[in-house]
Length: 349
Ligand code: KG4
Ligand code: ZN
Image 1 (cartoon, protein in one colour):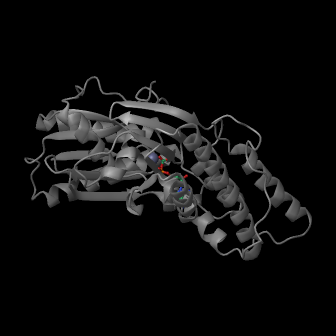
Image 2: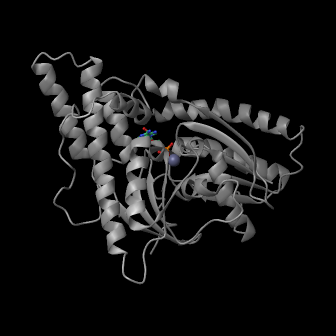
Image 3: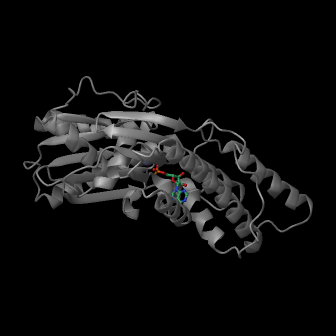
């Protein structure tokens, strides 16, 4: 089996994946959300320190699950990019120490690829080609995945990511972190037709690209204006209306781009067969329902990961590592590096 480690942001997680069957045997995760919530976002220094505490704890639990011995392990996998450098390093150090002391091969996994493989946890075969909408706290991407090793970025955000914009709006309303589930909950409380009106990002653009900072700014101005007019902006009805209006527009923006992408790839002989959404934002039920309707209208199958594997976890890292394990794509501990920013090296045309 493969032991995989994830520490790219604010989740410390370890998983065990069976090599022959791709079965997830064990998965554990400690989230730091409650600590970061007070700051309205992830504080890297605190995140790093909390990983240093949590990773040894969950490794001990993993070892206990294995009956006190790591003998059954065949490889160690770890997220190397992209992410926060000082949190990636915590997982990387543990992975290197395990690989060296147990004399096992080491596999570096791209976190974005990990999200794509969240679809195939517990499944022996991954489906390709795939069109992927990846919406996380760090990225908003359309990826054309021809095979496990041929992945190309088709569209990306020019500024904030989808998840990040939810986090920032939540912070403006002092609702806590992560913003996604909080905003979604408040939006569901808003009666029909009461959603605050916001402009659709890149409304007149024909380009396949995302932008969320203009929408975020429009929300900021609406809150300011309401405060100037004496509105109680802590009132549930006001918050619900802002959250619903923002969520609608953010999702409409994704839908517009995906519609354009599906249309551009539709000829009488060919069309996109599988569209998947992965990453923390893919847990959004409002968005899932809209994308399902869209996919049905294009005769395309919508693939989604189970809700528990939408946000960061080591199970997806272990599943992605399986492909590399079969190809003996290992890296010597001396050479394995964290690459916080890039993430793009594996997604070249
Ligand atoms: O994939 P993920 O766990 O971490 C990164 O790789 O960044 O994604 C976290 C992001 C956060 O910005 C969070 O607010 C967002 O996903 N998110 C959501 C929802 N649940 C989490 N965004 C919108 N709706 C949700 N239900
Ligand atoms: Zn992620």
